[in-house]
Image (cartoon, rainbow, N blue to C red; front, side, top):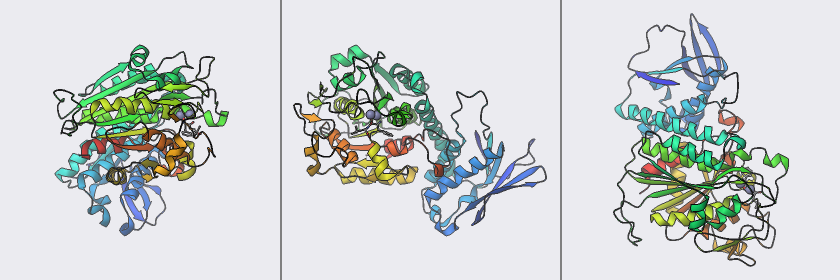
Length: 474
Ligand code: BES
Ligand code: ZN
Ligand code: ZN
């Protein structure tokens, strides 16, 4: 999709163009007007329209065009001048519009002989302020990297091993300032990441620990573990990189396993966001860490009851091998400490319980610091990736106590079906040391739902949110 801007309505083009109109309380339809087309999108009352509506309106323009095999669309920049949108930051609004044009155009048809029709050109005409132009430019980059994250996430488990995921990280970082390092099994062993190794043990395909570094504010001279924070302290993103989750010996039922090639969606979002931060030349230090492994079944798989030792020295009772995401993240959070980070955000398709609690419209978020939670929730509202909070109260820590090890990966007693989202977050909290932290359980947003107006499969969330965190968090 090509997005172009011009001050005046395009003169007769060589091909037919669909001109977009938004009409309150109208059905959505198309109408021939000579050689061209009128693409009418029904919208709610203009005075009620918020950023949330804007996201779906933009998407439905593209989806409707695609449905009718329309390749060229054009609209006046002022069609989005709704009262409450005018109060928003212009650059953010136009970035959001552009991102969503690209997100709605995306299809995962790599594996199809017959490709799905896309929109080739979008002409935006009218008077666009400088900030709007800036937003459009930014939105093109952010949209592109979000779609890269979706491609990575959507790739079937048979074609996406930890080593291949690492290659994808290198590919995404090409032509950006991002440095990628990939630790192999031997290096992971030397570092003592026993939890990552435990998860990977059942698969002949070894684990990888992917490190992406964007030193946009300059590298700290000496990585002294000083208590005082300074401008060089990075924001670190840790993404769950389970390339396929069978559940391990605590095997998933067939239905529950179907989409588990998407269990590296957190890792994919981190890859997309850090590469994007590099491409946008964000003047901050941003690090991405992706512990990657396949959770497979074999005679070498870790067993329920096994004890794993993490990089931090804390040990874990593995009571259920299907709670593997929190295991690999424990080593990711432990490794993050080396950067003396100002903030660590982990992103993971961590629990089915998050889906039970929230349905498919928001990711769960947890942080011991209200300020951190507020920042993320506000940025999520701006990026169109919504977050809803769960508590990390001390009352819940008892459920993370180990039987014979320091902690257990599921409650050792009591009803293990209660508070699944919180137990997972509390487990991770045990591995957070010396930095501000938030956890995003994105299982609810792993795949698009009907009302998202997106192609089936990965949503690419929360790539756009992480980019905004990279830009804004201080
Ligand atoms: N990857 C799954 C969580 C998941 C389930 C994500 C469905 C998206 C959709 C995770 O590794 C897992 O299996 N979690 C278990 C935890 C349980 C054993 C405590 C779960 O949710 O059932
Ligand atoms: Zn699992
Ligand atoms: Zn999993």
